[in-house]
Amino acid sequence: MLIRFEVSNFRSIRDRVEFSMVAVDRERAAARAVSGLGESLLTVAGIFGPNASGKSSVLGAMAHLRRAVAESFPAREEASLMQPFTLPRDGARVGEFVVEMTVAGVRFEYRVTLESGQVQYEGLFHYPERKRRRLFERRGSELTLARGLGTLAVARDLLAPQVLVLSIARQVGPSLVGDFAEELLSIQVWNASDDGYAAECWREAGGAAIALALMKLVDPDVDEILVDQPAAAEGSSGVAIVRRGSGRSMVCEVVDESGGVRRWFSVVPSVVAALTSGAVVVADDLDAGIHPLVVAELVRVFGDRVANPKGAQLVFASARTGLLNQLNRDEVWFTEKSEEGVTRLGSLAEFAGERVRKSENVERSYLAGRFGALPEVGGMARELGSVVDV
Image 1 (spheres, one colour):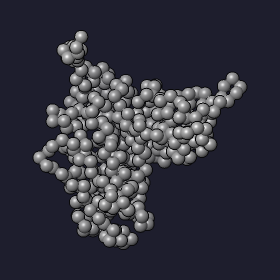
Image 2 (cartoon, rainbow, N blue to C red):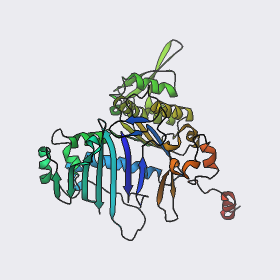
Image 3 (tube, rainbow, N blue to C red):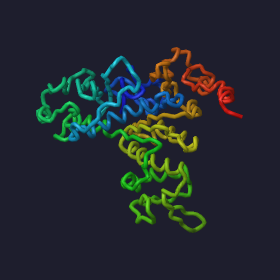
Image 4 (cartoon, rainbow, N blue to C red):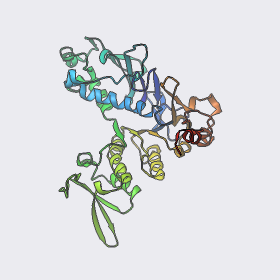
């Protein structure tokens, strides 16, 4: 499970921001206790804020780190490990990623520091019996390994300025390092522009009862999902929906469905993979073109112990404020831009301390401007009237 994530110098993020899945209100059923951690973790968290405030940058940083671990070896020099802050900042070229996750109930901490796209520092630690122990540390081209990780010594010969040790560890046999790498790579990444209804995304999910149940949320008449169908026309995805009603069935290509159905169809494989394995889903613009009741039901699924017995986590970005009252205060995060164009990220649970009551109508308070992170729309009609030639 994801514990927390930090990033600096990435897209609209200049200074360090931290995102956490540690529960503040631990007494409720939605908070999952992790005995080896001494904390309870959330299974749902949403990031809200104006357009262009940096929601996508926060989630994109998680996706970027995952991709770097997957691809930096053997891609070597072709890999790009940085997407630095996009506005001037006194020539700063250093960025950092930090992620903490549990593997089999044990806390792991991974850190990467980059300068000009090259790895300056990389380290992995774990906390058996809650004591911090080093698995490896890498400073430039110097690699130090814990005892028992002799098989990873080959990494010394494979290191390059843009190659991560964690990426190499996946290739050299089983170890605690490799286990953590696979946990990180199990994160399911989705955004509204994904062409996720292609056949390869559905080969594993297509026969799952949960996939069909999720599709019925948007269309109760869906009876079956067909994968690897012969292409009926150019541009066909090879995936089709079977609808049954009035004693007959109808096969419909997914590419011919509405935009909302296609988007939902594309997110379902990630949700199925997460719920069946206890993984993390990172979903940008989760509610784009999808009915709010469907999105609300998906949030409930991840928070329900029966529907989500393995503790899968949903981390999403949304501009739809109606979801705010469905979430607990520690499940809500806000982004906003400073005057310098820098993304700031904050938790509602930390806003003004205990004055954010559990019973508060968060949506109403947010729209009233109490928490900031609102678009500046006042006076737009007057401004447009001054520039439109009538």
